Length: 447
Image (tube, rainbow, N blue to C red; front, side):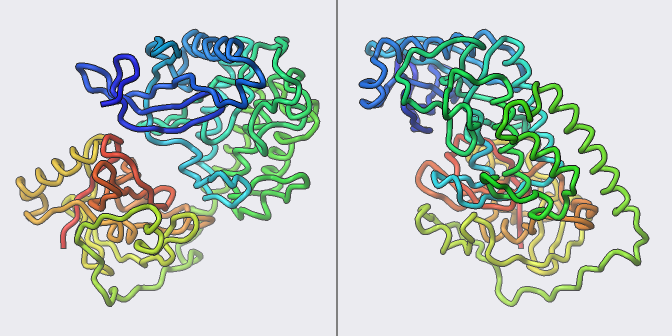
C-alpha cells in the first residue's frame, strides 16, 4: 500500500511541471483529500534549479493557507515525504474543465453552459479573485481545470503555483512561459513580470466566452451573439472588453467586472421573463412522441473509457448522439415516461453520496416499497441518457423541470472498472466516470 507521509494513496488526479496531485485517504477517519507533492520534471529542474522550485512550492502553500474565502481552496496540512514537501487540501471530484469537456487539445470545441449557470460560476470566480487581489496576489493561471466545483455547485480556485505578489520580480529564466496558452493575456506571454490584476480578468473573460459559446475566442474573435442565440450586442461588448488584448482596454478590477456582469445578467433575466410571459398560443407545442420501439438496456455492464463512446452512443463531447422525446407523467413522488416505459424516483438521494451509498439508497427504496414498487434499481447509462435534452435556448428556458432540479449529477449502475463507475450530468448533458469515492446523487428507476 503506497503512502505519502501518513496518507494512503488512492489514485493520481493529475500532474504538472512542479509535481503530482494525488487522491489520498486520511488515517483513522478514511476521509478522501487531495495531496500535491513536489516532484518537478527534469527540464524544469535544469531551467530553474531545485532550490528555487522548492521555494516556489512552499510559497504556494503559504499563499493558500493565508487566504480564507468560500471561492478559494484551503490547505489542511503541510509536511515532507522522503525529503520532498507536500501539502493537503480539500478533494472535489468535479472541475470546470471536465464539465465543459475541455481536453489537452484546448482549441477543440467544448460543451456550452446555460447563461444563468455560466454567470453564476463567473461571479463566484470574480469573488475569489477579488480576495486574492485584495491581498496583492495575481494568480496568472486562471483556466477551467483550476476551477474546482464542490458538491454544493460552488467554484473554488486552486493551483497558486504561478501566482506572484504585485510588483514582485521573477528570478527564473527569461524563456520560461508562465500561464496556459489561450487563457493567458498577450502581455503575460511576453513578460510575465509585467502583468497586473487585469491579467487574471482577461482569463476569466476567455473562460466565460468559452462557457457561453463552446469555442475559444481567437485573435479576431467572432461576436459571441453569433454563436449563442441567447446573447445580444450587450454581451458582445462586455466579452470583447473582458478579453481586450490591451490591458488598458479591460476591466481594471474584479469588482468592476462583477458589477457590469450583474447588470448585464439582470437585463437578460428581464428578456427571458418577457419570452416566458408570451401568450400560450404563441409558444410552439412539442409534438407527441411515439414510444420507443426497443427497450433501453437495464443490465449493468463494465465499459472502459476507450469503448464508452461507441457502447453508449455518444458524440465527441460525450453527449447522446440521439435524444429521446419524453412524455412525462408525474405524481406521488414518481415520474413515468410514456416514451420509454420507465418509472423514476422524482427526487433522489437527499444528498450527494458515494457509489456504494447510492446502491444502499436504492435498496432502501425497494424495502420501503416507495411508490408501491419493490423493484427499484440504479439506472444504466442508457436509461439516464433518456432524460437528457439539448442545451435549451429561447422559449425552451421557460420549461419547468419535471424532476427535482437540485439533483443534477446522477450515478449509474455501469462500471468503468473495479473502483470506478459512470455517471450522467443532467444539467450539462454528458456522460463521465468517477471513482466510487466521488459524490453524486442517486435516483431510482424501475420498469
